[in-house]
Length: 249
Length: 239
Image (cartoon, rainbow over all chains, first blue to last red; front, side, top):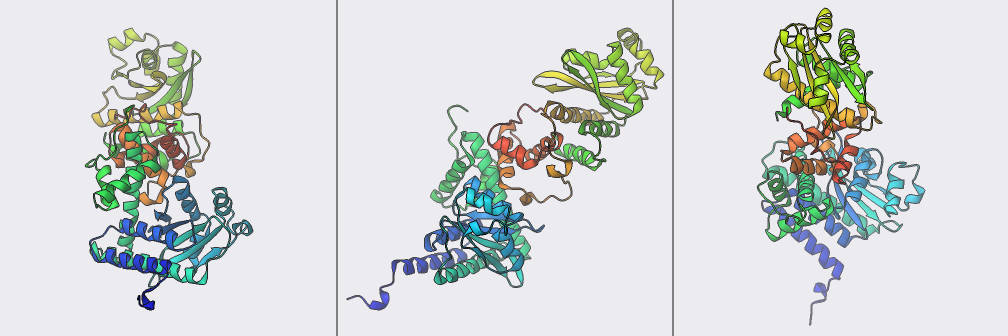
């Protein structure tokens, strides 16, 4: 007969599994973008939200999405416009969790973000600052298609996942032997730029959309067990050609 | 292409007083960078030849001479679609070719004229003229600058015209962080790099040049590239 202590809920075991895998990722020579992608995907899987993204702040203070649960251009834009207003910007500026359980009540709070978010179907948001000692280095942004607040347990889980994201970024610094947190951020941000450039190159080469290009980039990285940043850099440097040429090209 | 050249020329354009038109500023930069005394642009619209702008009053007068007399290097360029370089207006060759224009331009202190086509849709729709007070050839660097500036000018001539202000086009040359741009700019950079078979550093510079010269925000130009409404292939920047 099974020990009752081993009978965990399915969700509980998935949470444990996620943390174990995140910890495993951190001990090896890892790709920070892959790590952050894995993290945002677990957010969507474990928490009652529909989309998640990690935003990091550049040295000049611009918030950039470096990993999103779904890599759709329109969704990335929704994260980008938060440099004007939005929950991420507030979370980053004030260093506190910012939420809206019903965006319909928050048109005045975020006059640019709210209408755009509602237009693409979102009804509630939740943003948690990524804190590294006294510095805020970005935010974890969660979006829901339905109105409503996160449960208390989910809020705790979000905090834990955002702390893990920060740890991942510090770890990246150690591995790349960089001298400051700034460099760790720059590495992540630069990798992101390479990924976007690679998407553009692949879309032109294969006559596909940039969203489709990301799918190819990702499956190539996975099936060859190479980091996404490494694959993207290979495409940009023209060392890797992973797009089947379109018959029309 | 030496993309530092492009970066330097765009920086010069950007640092000029923004109250005049892009083409006027381009003429000023042309005169400065090619070490000549003046520069002007004239355009062919519905068969009529008109002056568009010039860097100085003297340059404007010489532009008028070419238009009114229907003589001069820019007239040759409209028909040939190729640059026409005349290092000595006092030479018998130049006097024979332009019996009225050559002496009258000399009266204005012009000793050499260099004319470059502004090609839009395969046709020279306008011409960029450089006027020099000294009889001489253009140096290699000066020639390369002039060719590049002519390409930039053709972007302005070929565009529908500006909507955004200069400050909105995202052309701040001062230590621009690559990651300050939205994803769409990086996507477009990749598209252009493949279309023109160039590196990403040069591709983003070309996008910025197009944004600047057409007075449109960089993100908007980038979106057009990503959604295939705009191709930079037709733009031959071979400075």
